[in-house]
Structure formats: structure tokens, C-alpha cells
Image (cartoon, rainbow, N blue to C red; front, side, top):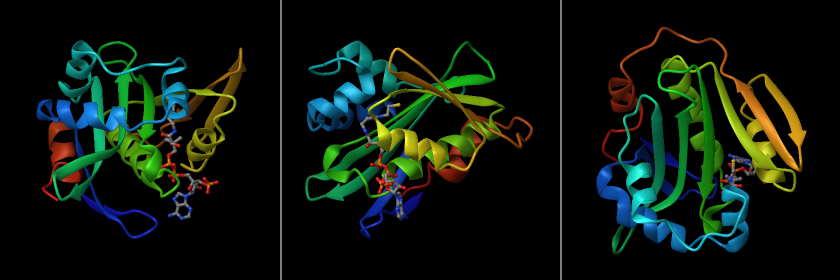
Length: 187
Ligand SMILES: CC(C)(COP(=O)(O)OP(=O)(O)OC[C@H]1O[C@@H](n2cnc3c(N)ncnc32)[C@H](O)[C@@H]1OP(=O)(O)O)[C@@H](O)C(=O)NCCC(=O)NCCS
């Protein structure tokens, strides 16, 4: 699906595929220590082969991952990734996370991914999306608040547990077809 960031940058929002390992690895390399800490809650040097496999080889039922990409001279580059993973196979609750590379933050990429993940979750019968967010992470807390869904928020040891009620659930549909309609079209 084509879209544009707040500054007009044309982007593609699409499903992550197994062939994206290298794009994902390169995107991780461009994250600042602060961004990595906010996402993982601890320092991290890189993604292991096993992690790269897990986050690119998806079933799009229990594990959904979307990327926002830009076209550069050397090819397509990842600038943001958002995913949700059901807490158990087929569960109606899933944990979500979004990461935007530092040089593209505050341009609406995270919000775009948030809306897309909510739409996919809703159509797939997920009732609650849960995000764990550090208290200092005002950007993510604000992003979640701005998705215009009922939100429950609790905090423990400096970590907010934000539960988005994915209201107005529609009957479960074939997830691959939904992705095909919304985010798998060529950009
Ligand atoms: C948190 C994070 C995902 C937010 O992504 P982002 O792309 O910077 O977020 P957005 O640009 O969509 O929203 C950020 C701001 O832009 C505003 N905004 C977004 N789209 C807008 C638009 N079209 N017009 C005007 N304002 C807009 C939002 O209201 C928000 O307000 P701000 O100006 O006070 O910052 C990103 O900062 C990040 O990757 N952080 C590190 C990892 C992390 O914390 N992940 C979350 C762990 S669960």
C-alpha cells in the first residue's frame, strides 16, 4: 500500500517476508541506543540469525509484521516495523510493538503502522492489543492514545501496560487475503 509521511516522503507499507532478513538487519544497525532500549528494555548489539528468522518467517495468523519502506538508490530500505504476536495460538489477545528508525521518527510512520495493525487485528478476531511501554517513552504512549480506541493503562516498575480494545470486531476473515488487499500490493 502506498502512503506518504508527514513531510511528503513516499513510502510503501507492506507485509514482512522471509527475503527481508538483510533489510531488517540493516535497519537495526541504524537504530540509536535509546531507540533500542525503548523497544527491548535493555541494550542490544544486533539481531541473531534466529531472531531474524523469527521476525521474517511469519504465519500472518498468530504473528503479523508490517514494514514501512522507502526506495533509495541502492534499493528498498526499511524505515519502520510493527508487529503483533498472539499470546497463544488463536488467542484473542496479542502483544504489539512498533519501531521506527531514528532519522524517520516524528513523521507519522509509527501512527501509520499502528492504524494498519489495528485494522488487521480487528479483522482477524483479535480483541485486545497490548503494548509494554517504558514510562519515559512519551512518543509511544501518545501514539497509542491517538489511535482513537478505548485504552486501559496500568503501570508497574516504570513500565506501562497499555491495552487497546480493538472494538467493533468483524467476523474473522482469511488473513492472507486481508493482507493482500491492504498491504501486499506492489508499491
Ligand atoms: C515510539 C515510536 C514508534 C513512534 O514512532 P513515530 O513514527 O515517531 O510516531 P509518529 O510520528 O506517528 O507520532 C509521533 C508524533 O507525530 C504526531 N503525528 C503523527 N502523524 C502526524 C500527522 N500526520 N500530522 C501531525 N502530527 C502527526 C503524533 O501526534 C506525535 O506527536 P509529537 O509531535 O508530539 O511527537 C518511535 O519513536 C520509536 O520507534 N521509538 C523507539 C522504539 C519504541 O519505543 N517502540 C515502542 C515500544 S512498544
